[in-house]
Image (cartoon, rainbow, N blue to C red; front, side):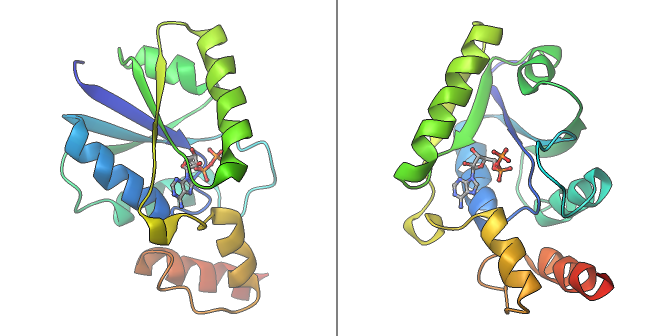
Length: 161
Ligand code: ADP
């Protein structure tokens, strides 16, 4: 597919920072796939199905965006979709080393696929899913940070623990 990009991540859960990157990407590329990874490398807060459903709901108004899940390596998923561009978000300096090593590893795994970094709007620069999970556990109001469906899901999840 030409001029298409894939935005992979764990999205546990999707935040307004991810959506900000997605909106920017949807203006630059003809088609953007938000790809929710089954493998998170850490204990999940939400299951794959829950993360997928929340991403679907949170992005339903963004044109030319679709949501998929994938198992295994992101580069393999990108390749399987005949795509050559992977998008990642770059926030503060703290992201840089991790994202750089990830991009270099992915280039080693598949030199055909390029990583393009996008910078969020300033207000989302320090927003992370891990911070959201902690704030939710402490009962904080989250509507400035996540879409309403995610806020509701977080409240429900915390109350079930
Ligand atoms: P990971 O895939 O490393 O577990 P996430 O699923 O949380 O990370 O995020 C996917 C991508 O989105 C990563 O490149 C991450 O840096 C980026 N990202 C996360 N939060 C934001 C934000 N607030 N602004 C911009 N990019 C972000």
